[in-house]
Image (cartoon, rainbow, N blue to C red; front, top):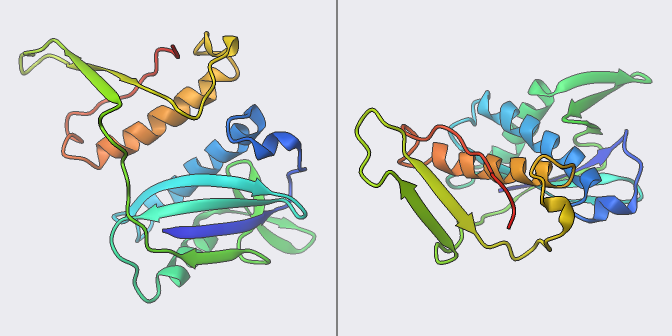
Length: 204
């Protein structure tokens, strides 16, 4: 895993950035990781890239801390390769004769006052005991599509009325983030050949 902390030049700190389910937090963290995923999936590290997770934003100056997770063990030049991939493949923007990078909605200078650390971790997909899957139909024919109805318990989210509508401002980014992570898991699993899509139908 790469622990990446970089300075952000086009974001003003607000208290909403301290809460990882606020609209402001999701508005910047989701596009940032989507771009990181696209960058590494089109690089020499594509076979090792696993996931991107924004861990939080910092203040004075504004920074974004991100975990970029790779499969396999670290190697000698891994840190250098990660830095070079981000430099080469992210969108370049010049501001006052300084070359910055645009990743998602954030304008950054990846390695000026930032840090890139390689950390050995295990990838934990979580226990299956809190999940129920009800496939329908139970014995599909080869030309049919099987829909898995997945219900999970959320321990870090308090239900409120603004989650009733899945297309509402609060619910929609959460639904997209959940399905994005679920899709990442399935396309790298033994079911990748049969997996088609994820759609969240609502919060209960």
